[in-house]
Image (cartoon, rainbow, N blue to C red; front, side, top):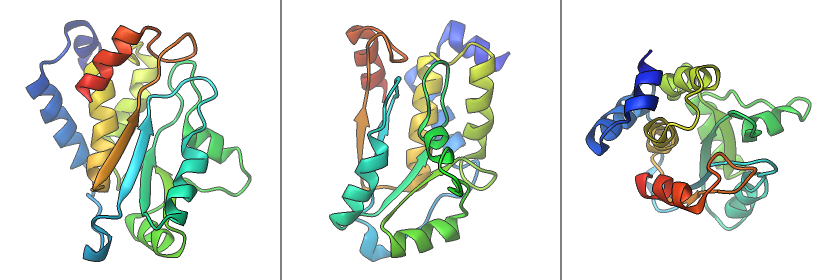
Length: 183
């Protein structure tokens, strides 16, 4: 009921910010060595059919000396999510603890994981519910979902890739621009 109310009535920017903050701290907020502070980067795509930017970008950024602690999502609606793509690789595990993420970042420089009981658990629950309640395209819910994951990562730089078109969540430039502004 809450998701449908948000979908139908919207939220003002302060309400969206409050939801985002509460979702970010619903689990552990990641802590990193001081020496990494300016190296912690991420990108998020609003997705679309065929979107695969994260898969080559995360290791490319790591090769350049960045640390990429990417908390990603599954497919919503008709789009395939990064986690779904990775889990199609036999043995790939998108469930990592914060301690495991730190170890992976120390050794490899990047990791792509999903929400969990420890990492933005409120987003994990709401994300799954959005897919079954026809609230996938709700602007405040999209904004809170994306930014809560990135806030929990404590990155120093973030690039947002907002897609539009017939294979994306938002089909028009105007709707994508509205999403970009909200983010």
